[in-house]
Length: 154
View 1 (cartoon, rainbow, N blue to C red):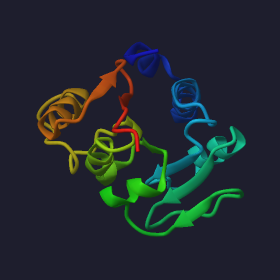
View 2 (cartoon, helix red, strand yellow):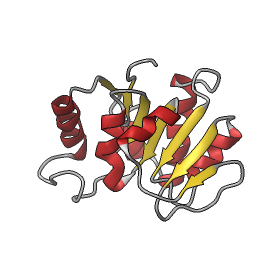
View 3 (tube, rainbow, N blue to C red):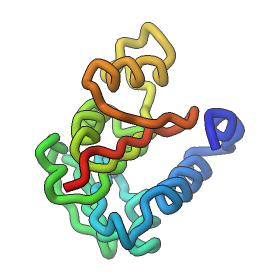
């Protein structure tokens, strides 16, 4: 895994598939059954998470219904972490920083987007995200592609 895989990926679907593989490997459904797909949009990742056995809630103000997943048609708030075992964001734009903050408390996985509205746009998005996590004092692992936050076990 790592950033090399991101560069090799042919399209967004291939990236999403790799992202799901890592989620399943690091956060097995038996330990992390309740998952939030933050800024889930059309629900592509949520569909795969549901198939993998997770109880998924899509949190997105413009979100779409997906069979087997709940939909909260609103923005994600850091406090929402109390309802979930795992918080997932695949290029969640404006919700990236909230996912990082929630990652202090619960397991979270972030595939950051490169939106200038989220990060300063002055440096590589991975460097910007790492600097934000350090500033927030969030413990994380970074494999070159995705950020993993373990949070505190509750």
